Length: 550
Ligand code: 1PR
Image 1 (cartoon, helix red, strand yellow):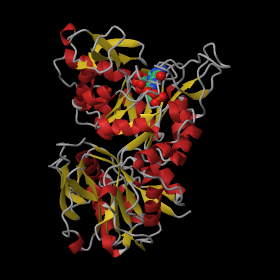
Image 2 (tube, rainbow, N blue to C red):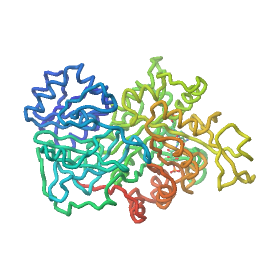
Image 3 (cartoon, protein in one colour):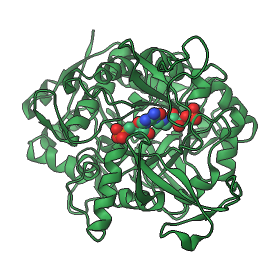
Image 4 (cartoon, protein in one colour):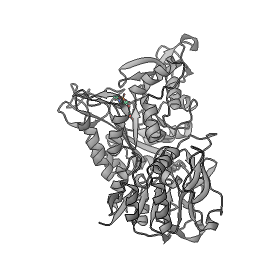
């Protein structure tokens, strides 16, 4: 197999990039020291996390000058995400740290006036010379690519094109930014090609094959309504060992995963299929992300043998969209007494192919401590440590709230909403109580307090479940979602209650949720992800339609 050199200078999720490179027919050789760079013919620089951290690491490791020489030598170079940002002169994220300066623009933070930041999800990369029937490195105006970032190079028409650059842009709210850029031997993408399904693999292959420019076979003109961020649909797999010791995808009703009827009635764990196979099926159906929740955390198993690691390794070989793993992300003492910090645990998952970790119970404890310390950050929580090391986009907080009804707001110190769904006792006010340990422990903390605290700690996204709605097939808790969305700026994934495609259209029409997640309705085979997307498209929502050929 032909090879490409990869520079993995910060611990990131390069496993999926390696898998994607292999998938398009190339082998990876690692750059282990600055001197290796001169042996590289094709060089890829991936990047995650903080601009300053990445650039300082490169500089301290002695890599910056060899990278510059490689770029100047005319040999193929590709930057991904922060690897793209490194080509620019600097970033508002870390003003004192210079970039390589090949492109005289500074990265700016997206404004969060009327949109969530980070920008997470599937967006366009449309050649600014759109009318010319040409594209570069396989980018297609009708495809979508996976982005995750808070800082971007805002686009100014013609300034770079006049310097010989080809530019592809995307729109986020009222801002137009650079999604991909190329000139001569240099190609860089703000999006992650290795996480962008078949469209991303095509781009990666075009770079590796040196396929710089292509004619478009279809009309390159993108309608206004087709550009921009799509509504994300996520398939979620709750995974645990069943009573026979097999790892299965299960699904509860209000978190109770044991069968109540049928041949398995009598308390067996509901078995809905095999995790790796089901993840692949949802990827092929067009899921924008796949989330695994390890709902029992495999408590009696040495950490390195956790079956979830193998599930991630195998899934990331065939599933080229973002993978999230939750359950047991916390400081852990192993069966032999070895201590692993939450960051160590997260690192194992990232190295096995996860893109994000989802923290549940540990986030509740951290939020309680945050308030009892007078809203002070310690820098020591799992959220802060993982967010600092891998970037906030890698940290999801999974929230498991349930409704507590009261007669009137004064009856509780917690934030209440007036609901249009009174309880059987006729009470019309409720607050959302946070729980830990899969709903088994109720805490004196409301959902607003929790999400505000974890946003302050550096969480990048909220996975908002709702125990009352979980497994009910009755639609999402729109009141809860609106309440949470109005309290924070980071993206919110609506979860719990999806029973049919109309529920997805409803949650996007009636809330500003950034993504919506379904579980039971997909696992039971009642609907496919593709059917949800077709329905939403029919209702005028922008969705990513996956293509299934390389
Ligand atoms: O506390 O950090 O170890 O994380 C445990 C994780 O496992 C948490 O994210 C928690 O939400 C999850 N969890 C724990 N117990 C259960 C259970 O069901 N017994 N599952 C559980 C939570 C929520 C979603 C579900 C949606 C959509 N499941 O994953 O898929 O509610 O379902 P639906 O569309 O069928 O209604 P920690």
